[in-house]
Length: 179
Image (cartoon, rainbow, N blue to C red; front, side, top):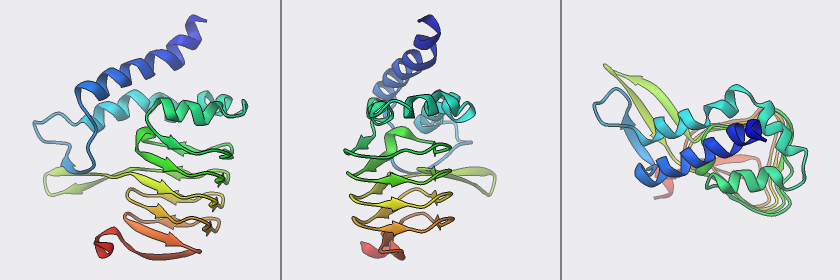
């Protein structure tokens, strides 16, 4: 019991305290600055589940457990979501998933991007939103700010870049272009 608590309850408890003290904000920041990055702290708490994916894979074996797990981290997850193995979610609180969504094997959902910028590291953080009745083919990678519209089928090995709107297999536009 102590092992289960230390693997599942303690990190969640620490995350909730961290989120209360340092709320996660969407947008651009810099990691090498003197200011503390709430995203960095949040990510470090969650990194155990990225490093050891079997911990969350076990939850997927129990119907509804993984969706509940994500909700506890602050995600919005609808009903009838089918999770497959080898799914990687890097920022659990920054996803919104509708009803009747199917995730193919090996999908990665990344609500952040880090890239070198002069003498610093630029961090971009934004929610990923997946609508109702969406099918995501295997090995897709979904970047921050992506919105996948209701009823969309995303083919296998699709890489969706930041701030794109995806409707009916087509990457339509960026969030900036939508206004």
